Amino acid sequence: DKQATANALVAQLQEMKAEAQAIAQKIGELDQERVEHTLVAETLSGLDGTRKCYRMIGGVLTERTVSEVLPAVQENMSKIESICNELHEKLLGKEKEMQAFQAKHNIREPQKKSVV
Image (cartoon, rainbow, N blue to C red; front, side, top):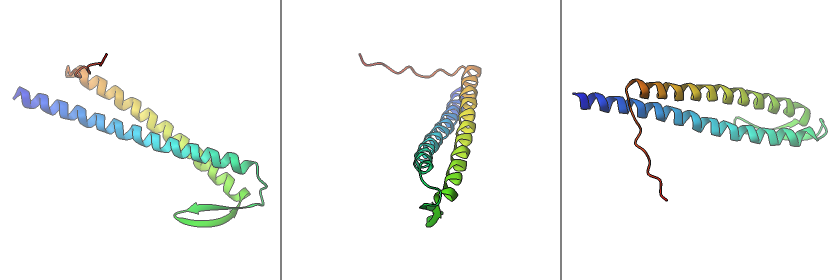
């Protein structure tokens, strides 16, 4: 029965790790989007506001002007940054939760052997 309890605790810890890994992966994806938005904003900011540009909206390419698209790109960029910050806080909380869980249940990670 102790072995079943121990296995359940380890499984719960593995689930927490998987959640943390999913959050970290999403942060990486959003950070890449933020970088792309930054490049687009930098490129558009040097152009005349009446110049034509194209924007993909929901899989449909639309024709707009730079002055219409640039504020939208900047707004999306700031939203992405705030979501990244929220996810980062969530990840830190999940890591603290995992550490507390490990300490409470005296779970030790197997040490990885270093190859010298």
